[in-house]
Length: 356
Image 1 (tube, rainbow, N blue to C red):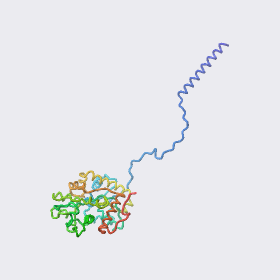
Image 2 (cartoon, one colour):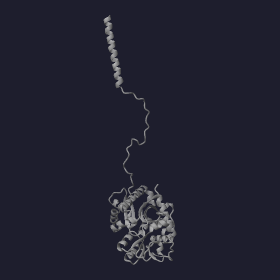
Image 3 (cartoon, one colour):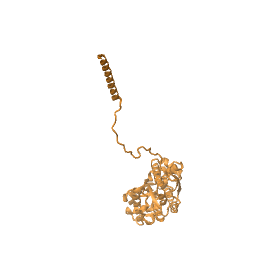
Image 4 (cartoon, rainbow, N blue to C red):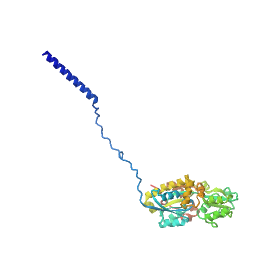
């Protein structure tokens, strides 16, 4: 009996040892059970893959016109990019030498976007009863007083002189500056804007020496001085304007859009403004390459002259509220000088395209 008890005790001890070892093994290998976690709220779009596809633009070709010369300089890069198929929007842009053709096309609705003088934009707005809107300003002042041997250094020196000026906008601007500097036009100074009404005609006569005092725009200034080394630039009319008027309000070139087109294709207009700003910035930053594009697109014949003139052309891209402020100040001044120059009335707020 004693032997059997000893045997039973041994079996029981072995069984207990086995149970202890099994418990230790499970305790070491079993993963710790985590408490229940609350459901995490799903963040909208967290698991979505962002789309790299650009916004789909309407399949429409923008019909455009630009005036040859400085007003059209800023469009050269855009036109070349479009010709190479490198723009998101299709553009069909022609270059015109006569602003009246652009004005008529806007009124008739045969062009969607156009670059033209600022006063002409106001005239078309009034004549068309508000069918166009101002998109952006592209050129500030481009006028300079040239002298050949008269010793002019200020407006005071012009007393008793005759100054030849191209007709329309240059004449109105120069008249205003004379009056702001104390010169009575017709008494203290004579402004002749009829003998050589066209800038090119006046430029040729200054270069030949027939005219010794004249106001000319760029790039005519660069051409004149290249052909006659005695001709000097004596007054920058943009700087003179800023002395007597709100700074930056001498604005001579702009881009406009047909209101109906802007309302129908707002995304196309938005893309155009991006493309146009890029084009103008390219011109400012790369005058040599841009001048070659200017010549290639027929905006101005000689690339070398354009390149030299660009720094003095005050090309810019101004949109939105800044555009409205500068343009409204300019038109108010021009209306005071010659109401007909802006179409007889200063346009209201509906003249300005302000992107939402």
